[in-house]
Image (cartoon, rainbow, N blue to C red; front, side, top):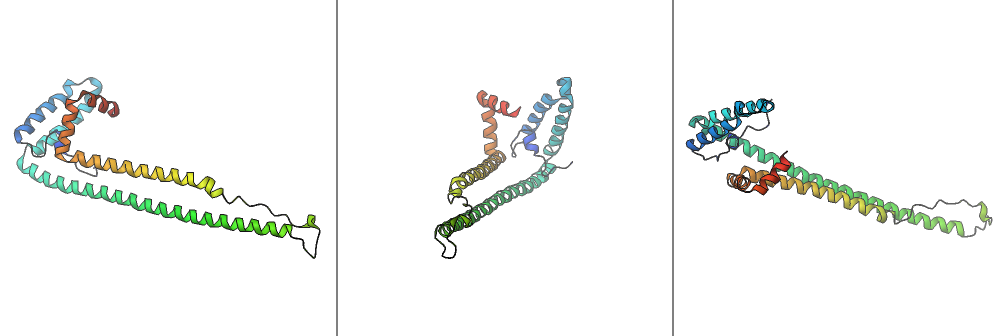
Length: 214
């Protein structure tokens, strides 16, 4: 089915957006040889055929000056739309965090208030139980009051819950921001090429990348 964003043919051919026709031709020939189904093992032929089909699709557009110019215009519009969606998601996360903080503050206020009322009730109950009644001095017949929960219940249980919840939310937002920044760096041609060169020239980086890529 259709994807949300169009394919980036420059990334498929592993060339810069300003690459010349000669560079595009050379890149296509290298990748076509690499992914040609006839050079693959039997279990990888279907995958190679799909990759080869995408390569031909990219080359057909980028090797034609008119099609390439129109494609670049559409790609810029698509990138701007993608960036706007990411910014909206980030703003939505910030709003959700503010709403969650407001709910936590409201819960804290309500619980603190209920604890104060419980403490006042406990004090009042104690006074009524221990002061002699002039009409009835039989203390054993007086109504016993159930001692409410201690007033430090909130202090004992609420801070850990709030701290863990805030830490989790902060972790989620930090992770989203890191992914967002990494995505932007990958989309910028200069940093994209720098990361590709780092991968190609650094065997340790290749091993680490292949470990997570599997």
